[in-house]
Image 1 (cartoon, rainbow, N blue to C red):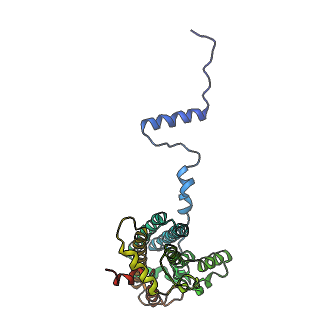
Image 2 (image 1 turned 180 degrees about the vertical axis):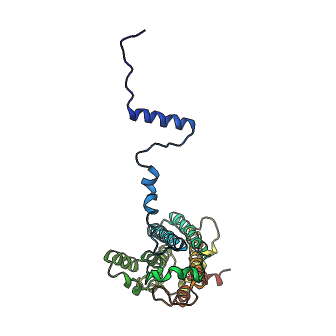
Image 3 (image 1 turned 90 degrees about the horizontal axis):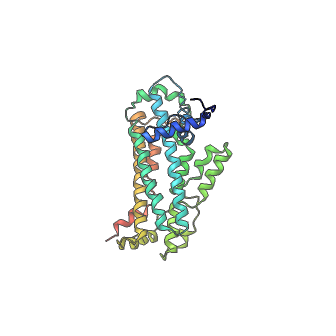
Length: 295
């Protein structure tokens, strides 16, 4: 029987929402979007558009992508170090442990990148090496930030960026700021450990020189092995960071030896000998030398 009434129109957006709800209830993924939320957040389509190789050699893609992944890791670890330093300056030792732990784990991921390039022989690399010109990982600004945060300060190393004013200014700021180790030593002093002015008030643009007073301080810190000794926990995490950064440098050295031997680097460095000298610059040195004196 006709009633003279017509069924209400269903708006397309309401119908789409009804379908989405029905699929969610059935456990199916949502498939209808305007813009894909994942891409809005991760920017995956942008990331996958950044690989522009210079040759037709298939192996170059591996080299380029791993280089880009390492750059992202440099930025992530640098971020964690800034978080760590904020907590140290606020005397929040417990809060400093989390970014320190994350940084150590990120360094593992960074180092793993070398394993994925272990297939590369000199012949593989030489198929596109000449196209890199003077380009070199030595010129990574974010890696310089990372080294400076670790206390490996060297003012001349920011010279390649002088024609990039913003990059140069940011690197200069990191060079002049206290390193992670500087902030750790200041924290120890605030916690009652006697450290001399020559350690606490030194020129921040230069590398920290190992000092017996710092070594003796860590010996005292480590005498209390109880769970409430947060300074000891911090020391162990910093030790792990130093070890894992050392792993990164060692695997970098081995990758260069495997693909280039003792050739001059693409950026004009002396290659292997430069990397060997870099490995001789210690990170958080007294954390290791103090262990000789520990009971």
